[in-house]
Length: 201
Length: 201
DNA sequence: AATTAATTATACAAATATAGTATAAAAATA
DNA sequence: TATTTTTATACTATATTTGTATAATTAATT
Image 1: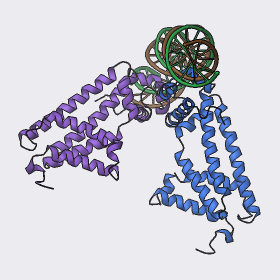
Image 2: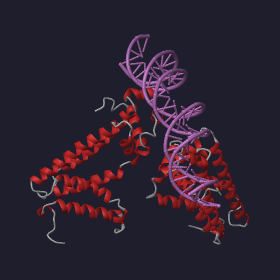
Image 3: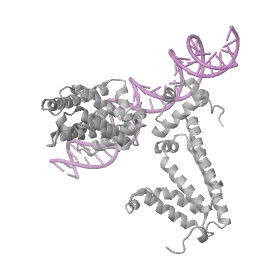
Image 4: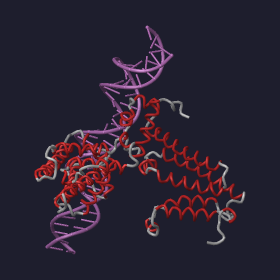
């Protein structure tokens, strides 16, 4: 809800920064460079943002909000819960793939912890929302009762590391196959029988 | 033929620099960063290279030499000349694809013209070698006589721009198809009839 | 057309980052 | 052990970057 959201210079700046931060990380990009590329003067930059970190924060916030919105769209749709899980796993998978290592590295290693704290706090809000959704699903009988929602989150996060594990990958023909295996494992692992589990395989 | 070629620290440094320059360009990478990443001390860096530009020059030279060697391998093989042309076009195509825009931008925009001049001079040597090969082929009747070898080079260079032209690309289903079209056009355009041209299509 | 507002261009001081060197300690090698 | 290589640290001189102040341009509004 930035009041400058429709200002063409503002948009140009944010888009340029988004692209460049994503590609090179935050610390490698100078404000002068951004202004040159976005074709605005430095004074205009400082009209919009206090400094580079605030700009990065704005971009990060936007990206995270997009993810949350997509997640909520899935959860609010009137489809079976099993389908919701499958779709949200797929969503997280895609988002993990699109993640820029350069951007994230700078978020985590930024000397002052500002960006990092901002990111972590937002991430926690999001995780709590997911946790809440899973808890509700558990109460309404969609998920196994003898399963801590925190474990689900933990497993979900580690799924993506597993998807990149060389040792594990060896046993599959391609990445897609391994991802399917993990998703299925997760899927059947959390569901109650009536909601997705096969009685025997 | 650097005497340090087999020194593990030297190798680590060069490999790290290769990767990082390729990804981020030269100017964005500091010597400290390279040393940290390659796990060597700064003093060791300066044992191997006078400065960052010399290191970049070494890497650029290596990359260009690799290309030239591959080209010569093709030209020295005992295969029909038509095949040689097709293979060397494919080689150039691949090399153009692998080109790092970040690396090249820094080569061209480096404030002191050192790297640029080094690159251009090497490139010219290479172009002359190709020119020479085409001239010989022309004399031995593999190429049309009424065709300046310089035109071939010019066309070859512009083929790769054409391959990326949005307007042109529209008319093809995929990139491969357009590339084939261009290669064939080039191929039949330079050959004498007996060496590749179809009498009618 | 005159006034007002927004944007740029330029220059600048202060802060920060980087390059390159000197030195002593530590590690590896002979 | 003696010798060589490598590192760690500290430091100076540059170079770069930040953030601001100012006047000049440009665009928008009255």
